[in-house]
Length: 488
Image 1 (cartoon, rainbow, N blue to C red):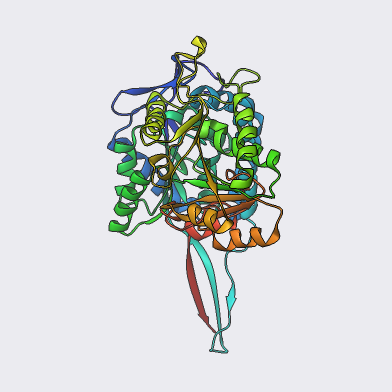
Image 2 (spheres, one colour; image 1 turned 90 degrees about the horizontal axis):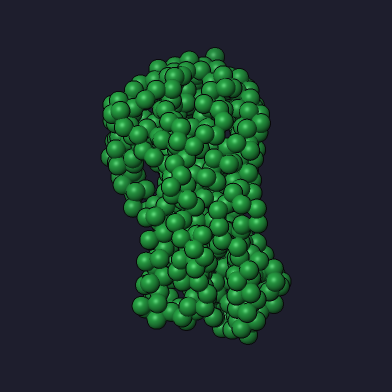
C-alpha cells in the first residue's frame, strides 16, 4: 500500500502484518467535497480484532522496553524521513479524506515529521535525577519506566499530527501502542502507520485497528491489558473513557472541547486582529478544538473591526481543498454539516443577528459537498447556545464590551478553558489577560489556534483531564516514576 488510489481497501495492522477485520466488513471513507468519491475502505473491526492487537502489543512490550532510548529514537528518525519523502501523498490523502485544503494538509504532515524528530531526540534526554539520601552509604535516584500497552484514540481533524504527537512519545519512552483512528480519517492513519512499518518498527510495537468508536474505542478503554489511554475528541466520549479507565485503575489523558475567545482591545492593530480572527476561527472550516469562536471587541473599535472582518470573510473562497486558491474546504461529513447548520438555526432563533453566511453556499458546483458558508453573528448574548456550546464549524460570534475586565469575565464564562488570545499594545492589559484568563493556552497578538510542538498543550476546566501533551511534558503521562535506593 503506497500510492493514493481511490476505492482501495485499507487493512488493520497487527503484529507486523496487514490483515482484514474478522467481521469481513469495511467502512467507506468519503471525500466530503465530493461524497460520490470513495477515498478508500477501512476495516470495521470487532472486539476480537482489538483483543488480537492488544495481545500483540503486550507481547512486543517485553523486548521493546529493553531497547535503549537511543535505539528507539533511531527508528523514529527513520519514520520521520519516510513520512517527509511521502509528504505529498499523505497530504493529498488527508485533503481528500477529511477536507482541509492541500496547503494546510501539507503543513500538518510536515509538522508530523518535526514531531517525530523531536521525540526521536527524547531518547537521548534524561529520565531521572539523583536524590540525596540520609544514609551516607546509599545511592538514591529516580528513573522513569514505560506504562506498558498504550491505547491511542485520535480524531479526524488532525489525522497526522495528533496520532503522531501521541504515538511518538509513547514509543520512545518504551511503550507499545494500539492506535484507533477516527473512521473519517483512517485511510490517512494507515499511511502514517506504513511509514513506521517501512522504518523497521518491530512487529507488535505499533498496531492499527479501524472501526467505530462505540465498538473498538470502547473495547480499548475497557481492556485490562491496556495500561494507559490517551484520547482527543468530544467531551461526552472523553468523559466516558475517563470513567471506564478510572474504574479499572488505568492511566488516562483526555483532550476535549473548547469555546475559545479572542479579545480585541481599543489599541489593537485591527488589520492584524482581523487576520488572526479569520484564520483562527475559519481556517480548517473551524474544525479545531482551539478555533476562535467568541470575539470580544471593545466598543470604541467595534464598528471598524466588524467592517474589516466582513470584508475579509466575504473574500474567502470555498471549495474542494485540492483546488488551487481555495481557502476553506467542507465540513468533514454530512453529520457535521448538519450539526453546524443546526447551531446557526439556533443562533437565529435565539435572537442573534446574522452578518455573513448562514447556510450552504449558493454555488451549484458545491451542492453535493458538505460545505457551510463562513458565518458571522452579532447581537450575541452570553446565554445563547452559540456563545456557550462548541460548534466545531466556521461560525464567529461578535460581542461588544466596554472594558478589559468585562472581556476577561466573558472569556472565562464558559465550561471550557482550552485557548484564548488578546490583541493589544498595552503591556498592563497583556499581563492582566495572561494572569486572569482561565485557559491552558493564552496567546498575545496571535490567533487562538495553534501551539508549537515543543510546548506543553492542554486545557483547563472541561477542556481536558488537566494533563498536558507535546513537548517534554509528554513524559509525565507516558511513564511512571520509579524511585531506586541502593545500599552499599
